Length: 236
Image 1 (cartoon, rainbow, N blue to C red):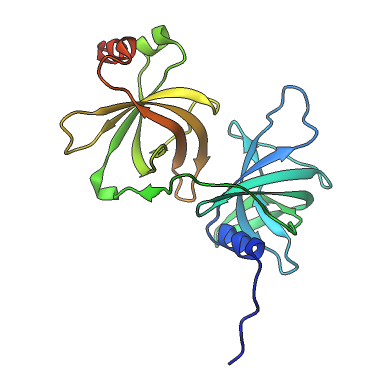
Image 2: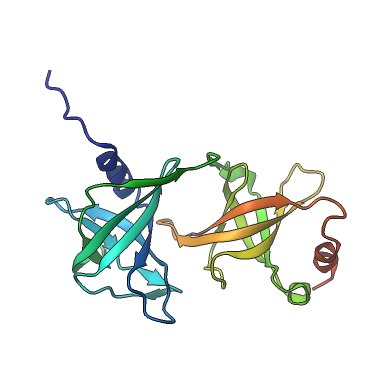
């Protein structure tokens, strides 16, 4: 019986990321003044020669064209690991994502090495879809604004000890690293839990759902945030 050739961690991680159409965060150097420093993309496939095919990156729902030869930094998650690497743009193409659908894509050099930024402190657990945990989200930078703000309504998709993943039908009108207030409506709970969190990313999934990743999630206990509770209790 022929032994299968051993593969490096980097090879296995890239294969996993491509097979799962994993989201990729791209940093470009240099960055023009006033432009976005962090772009979003997604692994699509690999070429026979090993080069990677990524969806054309975007920022604020607009595609961003990166010229051939530009150096990039990429970061993505595989399991409990957050990985980063350096690469560069080799080409642009049309990629057939489905038999009847082509998408704009770019070809980048396959990295020789991936560097682990860290391992997730707490593993994520998928939420049973039949539980239908609805989530109301408010952007809480300004309490007076919160008082009249209508919540964005989403559905809880996954959770960890200090993080939540919430799915929305439309992208959120906010940049990352902003503070939000969440109310989780769990069917069997005696009351809704209210939390403060930080929006880490909002990424379009292959299923067409916008996944908002929320970190630094802290539950607000009675008396801890009276102005917030008053705002949420005010009729809209």
